[in-house]
Length: 180
Image 1: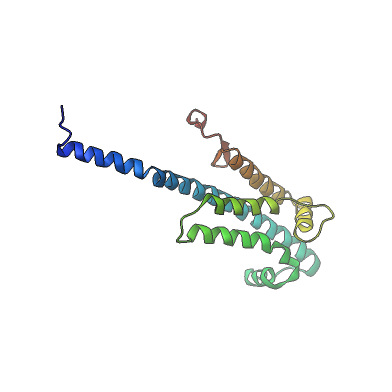
Image 2: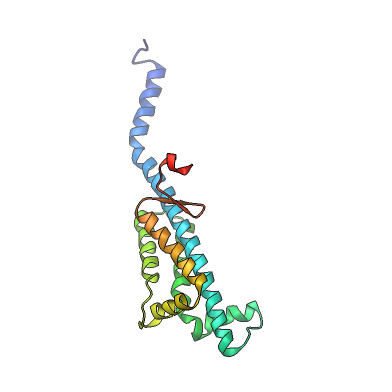
C-alpha cells in the first residue's frame, strides 16, 4: 500500500486536482476544435456556392455585354460593377469567417453561430423580392451548378444543427458504427 505522504501520492493528487481544475479548459478546447471544424466546413460550402454564383453571373454578363477579356478584368468587374454588387454579402461573409478563424482570440460557439446564422439568411431566395434574395433566386432558376452548391450548403447547415458531421461530403451522425 502506498502511503498518503509519498511522492507518488502527491503527484497523483496533483494530477487529479489539475484535471478537475482544467476540466472546463479541456472541454472548451474541444468545443473550439468543433467550432473551428464547423466554421471551416461552412466556409468551404459557401466558397463553392460563391464560385458557382460568380461563374453564373459571368455567363449572364457576357450574354449582355460580350466576353470578358481576362481574369483581371473579371476581378475588376466583380469589385466595381453594379452587375456583381449583389454578390458582396456572400464575399463579406466568407471574409468574416476567414477573419474569425485567423483571429488571436479563441473561437467561440456564439461567434460561429452568428456567422452560420448569416449564412442561413443568405441561403433564402425570394421570388419577386429585392436585392440579394431576388438575384439569388434568379441564379438558382437559371443555373444547376448554383442549385447543387446551394443544396450542399443547406445540407451542411441542417447536419450541423442536428449535431451530425460531414465527412467527405457525406453526412455522418457522429456514431462510430455508422462511419463504416
